[in-house]
Amino acid sequence: MAERSRRGAVVVANGAEGEPRSAKDRALMHLRPHLVIDGGLLAAEAIGAEELVVYVGSEHGEAVRSMSRAVAERGGRDPVALRLVEAPHGYVSGESTAVVHYLNARDARPTSTLERPFERGVRSHPTLVQNVESLAQAALIARFGDAWYRDAGRGRTRGTALVTVSGPVRFPGVYEIEYGITMAELVAMTGGPTAEIGTVLIGGYFGGWGSVRDLWEVPLDPVDLAEVGLGFGCGLIGLLEADACGVRATERIVHYMAAESARQCGPCIFGLGAMAAALERLGGCRPLPDDLENLARWSAQIVGRGACHHPDGAAALLTSGLRVFADEFNRHQRGHCAHASLRAGED
Ligand code: SF4
Image (tube, rainbow, N blue to C red):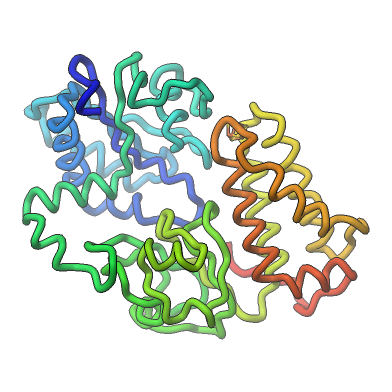
């Protein structure tokens, strides 16, 4: 960006947060709106941008109100133009090309043009689309210094991150953690479990399932998680009770991802639709003979076939579900579920 932008460049502080169980961006915008603006202005200064757009998910009412108040409090005294835009509801409306598309044409669907937003974005100007938490972290580093920032972090990644913890713990919600604390420490911070925990969804709907037993002592650090095949993603730690049905939990997420397709690429519309239908039959223990086999095949075939990474995320989630809940999937393919209530855990 710094190399190509001079005239008319734009920074977008991306707070769409369409990930259903994640709440960290909206909490940050609600509680520390000026940090987000400060970080956006720093980025604008670094690349010579002329405008900062704060893009907030319209469904996050408190964040919208707090950010609008903060924009008004700035009173037009900042060196770049500042405006707030409410992002339409939708899982993909925060994808970077969808953000640019919405700001240009009021259509929050990803585009597949070869030029990326940093080359040609809002009003055809180079555009940096950056997550609000990253911008707020930049503002803190500017204020307190890099040594202060590096002082936090127990493992290989320095600094802190906001995470959203959901599931059977005493106080689910948004926490700021040092990178590198373990899952065991994080669960202790939330007041401890209220039920036996079996599995965890890490990184959000674009992330993957893992067994809590295997992950209990693994540092919550992007590098360590990558070594066990998982990503930090949006920082969601979605805990699932040991007695909940993993097939139904996976079905619910893939179903949601299929419904949230922007419906412009065939593999995404039909592929995710077919996956969701097969999972629904399996979840209800009324599968077709080849449902499980097809799911394994489709989850590999669909990768890279959409204009954006939406189908890839659903495929990765399904692949991890097929691995972590392998016994349950096999049982469901034979028409049985070990979980009497077919409970899938909380939303
Ligand atoms: S892959 Fe899916 S979500 Fe992405 S642009 Fe195509 S239809 Fe839309």
